[in-house]
Length: 164
Image (cartoon, rainbow, N blue to C red; front, side):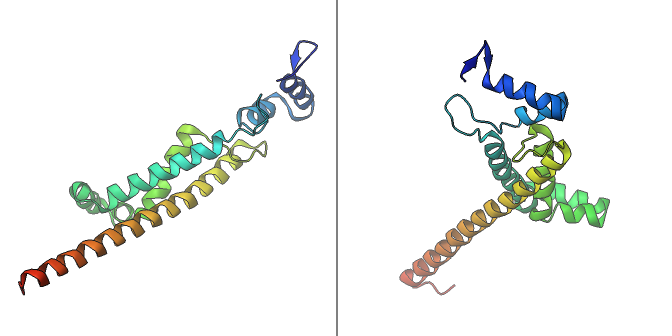
């Protein structure tokens, strides 16, 4: 950043905003990455964090709710109650909770309103939407692979003359 009288432009802007917004709001706005860095490029850290959280949440939710390795856990939790059991059978529901945990841990901010909780809620629901999109892509790829495998099996069966 350019220096003016020994201060960076960000420091000068920070001191001007501190007077009108309060120091806590200023720190939040600066920490959120919504300023242009030395290269003049906008910092997209919050967006990348949301994308990574979405991919991880999608993978975690599909793994927990649909794979055989977690079947005993799902059956055990289903005995605890219908609603919590449903959570462990619904990848869409589970992805919400996985995203919420990721948002609490990493605290990405996509847009900064000066109200931290509002910013995190917006980031959470954008991330949930991205997670749903990732899950859709995973399911589409899985369905294509299964369809290919079934056609391959039918073709092999026809070629061998086996009618089982």
